Image (cartoon, rainbow, N blue to C red; front, side, top):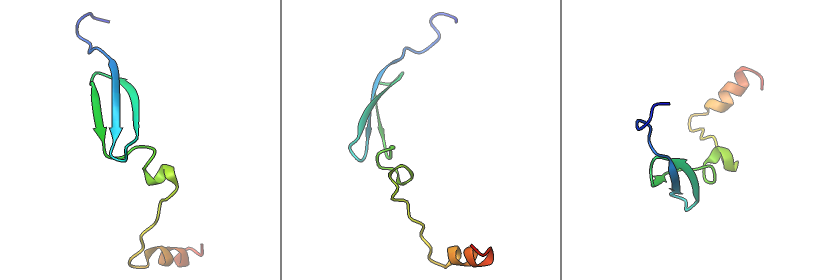
Length: 65
């Protein structure tokens, strides 16, 4: 690798809007994010499907599911 062209990696404290904090290594000192693995619906299992127009039922009926 060439010298003096790569950024210096440091420990970075990441803070989520939900209050969760963790550390990663990057070239920034700190980061603030909106959503993390502790509050994202996919990871927490609280994922809901919003069906205002009956699309899910229509799909299930169409394909006999």
